[in-house]
Image 1 (cartoon, rainbow, N blue to C red):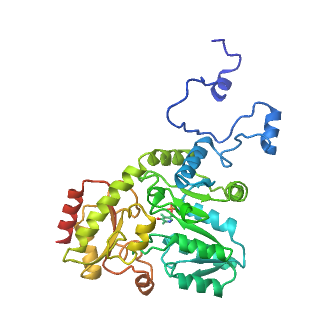
Image 2: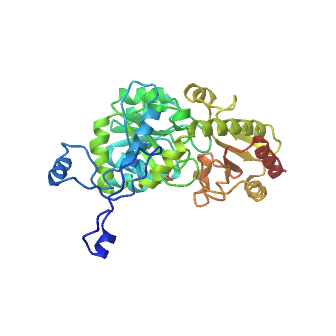
Image 3: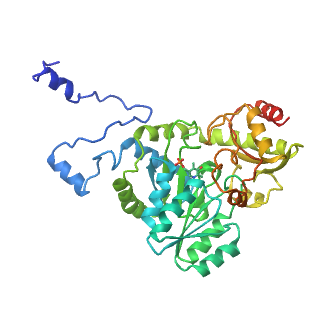
Length: 398
Ligand SMILES: *Cc1c(COP(=O)(O)O)cnc(C)c1O
């Protein structure tokens, strides 16, 4: 080693020339806000877009891009199609990125009333005042969807969640994609609940997929993130990317790296928690304290046929109505040993009583209209031993 020719403080401040070694086995975490150019000319070429390269963390990061490519590989698995993904700082940032890039004043968006609460709020509080018309309908009724298109010639995007929270209502993605395309509109699916292991909207004709990676894709409750995938690679690469760059909604490389870890066990987790959820749904539907169970994997559920057509398993969300309403709901929560965390998609089972928790500020009539009744309990079922889960439920229902 040659003796440094700088002052001590300079030596401390300057970046080290780190050793290039054999390739790391695991995706490296690039914690850097900027990337060095070899010389002025390379900087020019990269800024002009004639040479590929990284510039600044908000524009792109190798760790983040590796995870984006992996999401594309999963959502397009065995399909002869192209797609491009962008990761965001949260599911909401992803949904906002898609809407704000695609929708213009005068356009309409067709959706369902029982969307994820944040998405409904975003649409009504921010897009509606910008003169984007929000049209609500029942996406499981083709007749209603067709009528909405007849009544609103300006529908540019259909946005839906299947299965939806907490009633497990589902709609036929393939049929809706056809109606949307016949009317020159695009279809975007929030695939957070299903993940690409259980349901692949691109194979059914969807144009966009959004995810809250915070949930099953991360899978361990350790970080926030979101993703948008589009079939129009150019549009994602240029328009959507530009909006993400300018709004600063990029994901942190560390959070992307956590998603990368989670994805490795996605099929194992989704299979295990779906099996647990089905066993729990069956157990609850026979229990005398339970009025009814919402789980599209039950043969007598209203949407079992649609779900069976387009899903591999039915996922980990089970909700059920307790006999005895609000009081029974709160009592159940007191007895339950499950964590009371207001999220979903972790490896341990989480429980929520929407009427006294997430929806306590929502008008009761509106809440009831969306199937969130007083005695409704929602489980995000994890991968624990099923006997432990059924035992805890049995005790809590006493
Ligand atoms: C959680 C969730 C979102 C929002 O994602 P965040 O990561 O919390 O911003 C959107 N859609 C669905 C279906 C969700 O469950």
